[in-house]
Length: 186
Image (cartoon, rainbow, N blue to C red):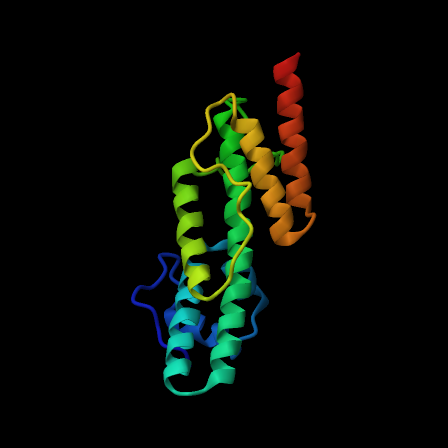
């Protein structure tokens, strides 16, 4: 079993359950969907992977360390894609078009640009510690002005395409950016 991180996610999912899920001892589609949508659970799983890598490395078990590192890196890439998508939505919201999400009925407004950018920097740093280098050059280096927001959103969506390939969420966000640009020009 992997070593446990320090804090339990606020959603109430126990660290023991997350640890057993991480180790492949729990197969539960409901838990899978929850983890996919819960940033705190994903962060705890990332911590489990990092801790497991360190413990396996100290124990002289290179295969286990490589497996944990690979699993952690794969999850980190998925999380980075989620953050990059969220950054694109934050850029669209900066445009001030009154509709930050390309979804017809979004669950919530996107988070603040600075908060998402901080999560991206933090995750990128942790992934680099694992030797994973992601192509993020197209992301805006700072919060764009409303006039630059659409270009920044398109840059983030281009980076998203490099992280996960063409996806429905990328297509919807690009359509929203195009619609915003068209409405602003008319």
